[in-house]
Amino acid sequence: MPIERDTVLHSWCVQAEWDASTIVGGRGARFWDAGGRRYLDMSSLAECMNLGHQHPAIVRAIREQAERLCFVTAAWGAGPRAELAGLLIEKSGFEGGRVFFTLGGADANEQAVKFARQASGRPHGAVIARDRSYHGASYGAMAFSGDSRTRSQVEPAAFNVWHVPPPYAYRCPFGATPPAEEPDPDACGALAVEAVGRAIDAHPDTAAVLVEPDAGTNGIVAPDNYWPGLRRLTRERRVVLIADEVMSGFGRCGEWFAWQRHGAEGRPDLMTLAKGLTGAHVPLGAVVLSRDVASRLEHQMLYTGLTYCGHPLACAAGVAAVHAYEDEHLIERSRTLGAWLFRELQAMQRRHPVIGDVRGGHGLFAVLELVRNRDTREFLRPWPDVHPSLRALVARALEAGVSFAVRGNLILLAPPLVIEESDLREALDLLDRLLATSEWS
Ligand SMILES: Cc1ncc(COP(=O)(O)O)c(C=O)c1O
Image 1 (tube, rainbow, N blue to C red):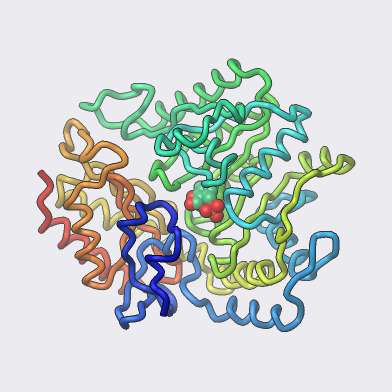
Image 2 (image 1 turned 60 degrees about the vertical axis):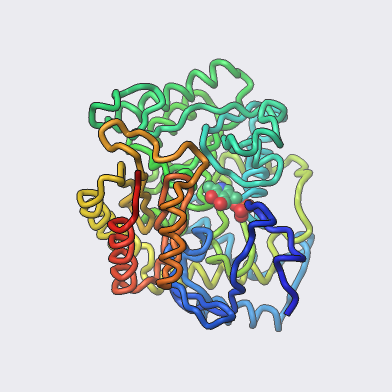
């Protein structure tokens, strides 16, 4: 077999340091490498394999569609494309809306911004997004992302993108609470909404606000009042609200889409999807447009689209995925198991002073933020460094057959929604032991 290390340019790493096993198979919450070593997947790889590895119904749907028809462009109709669009509209309650298919999350966000700008009649209008956010790694999506690591590659202002601080209650960027006091999520949430309002004042040509409604890559879970506040504000100011549901969608936050926790009133104008849409079995993304935005575009020329948008193989996988979430009651399962996971992690926090904060609890997504000092909330390491003991913890976990995701000082827990409770228990017990036997000074 050719040695991948020498031939492939790998993403998000230093090439000379890339040294990973070759994965050859998987099933449910486990995957295995060429050497036969098995791993319990506590992050659904990139928080995308919500339905587990090699879901049989999705694999079958792809195979059957491949035998029928592999490809047709958007200039022609395709059965699975129409079926999936209908299912997404039904699950999101975007009656009268439309779906635009993309290849993944980054281009879904870029297309959503194009639609928001075109529909609002502000073709170059400003976009308000958040610091510490991640919306993808193509140029436009990088500009939307408030990621200090990529600022040297792209200047958001060049894309008329402006960032505001996030509703990060544990370290409220608006100083809602000093470190000595308990965080006040509602105060922080309200101040974060006000900050968006001020940004719109500063940029009167604002066309869109683009944020994740719940948990995401940055491990920040929005306080309960944040999304409803943002929805009210954007409605009043006639700005298109785009919910990036690339990670939070498809059960990850206990609902089909995270904004649904706030009822129909919380419905955004546009919603972007990827990852869980096919459970990552085939690349696919989507923008779901409200009836209002879709109707404003109805008689305008749409100068956009990529060759593979709405690829039949991917859409067939998407249809099978939606049915699998439904048939296996995975959205409800995520909510129940997620609540249990959250309680277990809170108990773990009481045993380990290094755990400063536990966030999540809406679905099978939780975050542990590690700190040097719980009283002062001093960072364990400055972003984006990873403490050597945390690196070692991940390596020891892999040795023991469990794969955990870490970003900076955060441990992200986002297993496939099909994970067995006994497997989740095993992973938590291991994490508990590893935290106890690590040196955190
Ligand atoms: C919230 C969010 N938006 C967008 C993206 C980009 O998606 P993709 O990698 O499919 O382009 C990601 C990927 O991690 C994400 O987490």
